[in-house]
Image 1 (tube, rainbow over the protein chains, first blue to last red):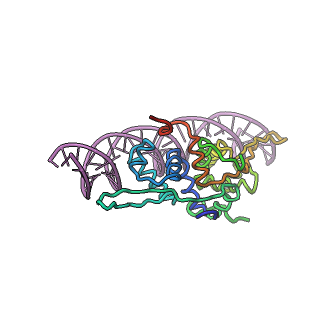
Image 2: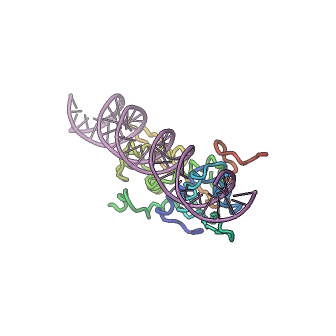
Image 3: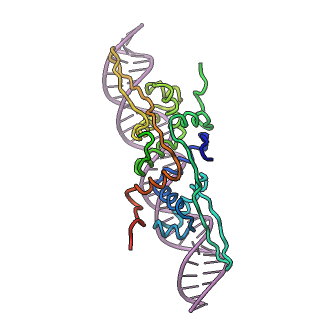
Length: 112
Length: 112
DNA sequence: CACCCCTGTCAGACTTTTGTGACACCGGGT
DNA sequence: ACCCGGTGTCACAAAAGTCTGACAGGGGTG
């Protein structure tokens, strides 16, 4: 996922996942340190259900990874961490992404 | 705006503006050719009011520029074009952007 | 037992975004 | 006059995203 120019169908969810102050903060926190969910919620001072939602979006976009660790004593803790990535964001990437967009307005692609 | 690592308050609207298939297509179309609004609407097959909305968001994010040209015969036509930009999108940019985030969840920065 | 910390999900309220049709206005040509 | 194409804005409905409180359960400890 690093360095390659993503398709439109990949780029849109990626950008949507990043276009949020909360998720930016979450990612930044996870970039420095791998933590478990409740601790992260405390650290960022947000409700756990809310954090869950944001984490799911980040996970769906492939930006974070979750791992449910079961400690030797039986208690479960879910550790999450950021996934390194690199996307050069410029007009060229946009043009290429737009060409690989499926779904609705696929019109006006070829004309004469 | 090119190459520099944007602040969080700049990055979020930028990403939000790009996180849309319609706007990706609009930007891609404007990257190759400068056109006027109605022609662009025809080309992309979308309603003008809708295109207007998307253009306003792109313009607000600094990604397109509009110019209302009054032809010698008096009729006005609004030409729009894409503004070149480059933002390296990676974890490091995110971390730096999150540090420069103002507003709500600025908590967990300084305490005790 | 009661208490603590953890995970995970739910319904509901709320706000923002997206999309549509209609309208006003301008000027040129027939 | 009518018709055409262009700009710009409006109210409105529909959809998507955001956020909260409450709930289920698991496990450890006093």
